[in-house]
Image (cartoon, rainbow over all chains, first blue to last red):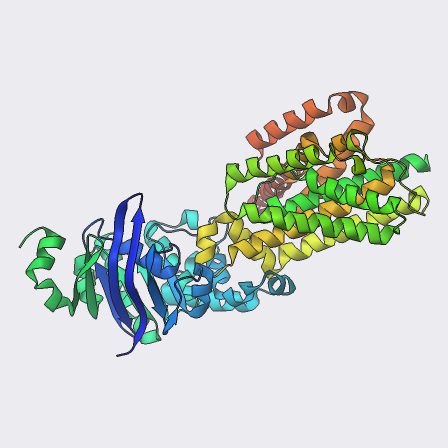
Length: 248
Length: 287
């Protein structure tokens, strides 16, 4: 398998606390990769570094063999790198469909002057409506995100990311806060993404769902990669069980 | 009488351009600015200085617009690093820096400003009509922005900058664009003011003026073009219809700001939407 993305010896500290201490791993094209680890392992930091929402202290990030380390987040989106937030961040002044439309029309936003000449939002609306249907939010089209329960807001966050036509989607704890039924529905939804040509990196604490949907797992502990490989193989390792579950 | 009408029309038009220019920065793009009068002043001083050198009207207006826009983009660069209340304080500082600068420049007339500005070459009513055409163009441009993809993207930036970045928005570029357009239009208002007043003083562009512009935007409804147009007309005419309103202008503006923030944060536009919404609901309820 060829690597679609690669992070190489990433270091990131916050006020002297190291969140990433030489993290390196590759993401293969078409796979569903889960990044797991105990609280404070540096999972979200690694994901935000990949998305360009944080800048590393040192190390490199490659996407499609291109060094994107210095590129801002919006430029990485244009290359095909999508991201969803751990704590959902819909645009609360927009309706549900408008939240997806702004992402669906992301090619129009590349230049403010180009955006000034575009008056019709119909194409973006049509694309957003199709995505909302696929994700099961058609009935909520004109509702404010404030009116949506958490499960639907999480799905809206994923819908918005899909509308960016990403080749690599970084999902930061999309199952957090959901009931087990909602989590299973969400996991079923995101496991279909590789079939649609979207490579997925999932950061998640819900180990049951992770083991159900992931092709491969990377385990982080204290800002370092502890293990990586097939889910069953990785979870059988004593050091992983020790770090992740506290049992040996 | 026609002189009075021309004067009133001119002041309304200039205030409208000013308020709409701030509305692009604060209302559309969500960037608070408490120093907008500085860009009004930059346009005015540029146009006044050039007019005294014999440069014709359209060129001085263009130069004032361009100068204010260029400095606006430079100031906008500061907005890339600061947000919300820090941005408000930064832009307030810009206003003070501008005043501190012009007050010490002998070539700009220092405390006495610039007087003896040549006439625009139009009679007062024709000049008022020129201002009205400029104001109408700024209204049309504001509506165009609002309905374009740029306006949609501005809304996203104003709502949540970090979320906007993750949907591919180049947030710094959009903020700079808003600052560039908004401050350039404030510069145009300044240039138009120069030929109307024929004398400019530093105090015309002070902090109180910045707050007066912001008041027009907030009372109209931040982000609403027609709301800001309505509030500008109302707040400009208010001191004209009542001497007391003129004497207590600051008190009235301040009081209105407090009342709007407390009872109708959407301003006149928000009130109109609520009124129309409840009227529609009542109509639906009637069998």
